[in-house]
Length: 337
Image: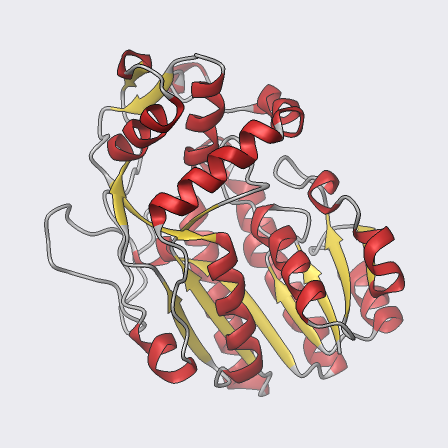
């Protein structure tokens, strides 16, 4: 089987490629990535030597219809797994246009070409932020029946992409599935994201910048558990269906900072507080019973173990993450950006 993976040089995409090539010894993967700020070919070091002709890469944009068409014609994929996305809320506030171009128009381009070549599965990777947010202390939870209520340019662009995927299924019969996942953590995540940001800052004894809304909560899932969920959805999921993928593990931003500082033996005085960013969601929590009951998926990594393993990875790969620190968003300088 041949998979075209878009955005495969990013955090989740690169972990998924490593997972799939190791598990399915006969399959081939071709990775299409534009290598924007979150894409890093070092995430895939060694794959050429380990897997030879089973793995390939090309630089390009999913918004370029002619390029994508030629790629389909040449590689002839059976399955598309679409990770390609601009995915940082702070960057979306500064430049929303590129988010809609990549996340919405790029997805529609892939759908158009996938329909032309009659692929057997189009799997789209979405985000829990499409549902909006929840009150901090409520018993509410997002199910697959929850209406879309995106609050930021990023989440709006992803919600639009989801609807485009479902529309191609309803209108053209394209076999599609969607996974809606909570916040991931693990190796190869860009240090702009919360957990690797706090880890890298703590290692260097630099201030950890927290918004004044530091009690906002997120649901956390180890990236390898997400990869297993996508695998099951691709192989066993029902066409035209959306599957929530969550862990039921909630931690506030403050709790994440405190845990990282404690594991690394750093003082809490490293924490600093700045005004909140615009449109900041309070809380997300997913009802994942559908994927559990239909496909038998369960998260396997407990948060404390996963966080310690992630911290160890960043300690041992300091050169990898120091390269990407140069392009970080200054979260405490919204008025200047």
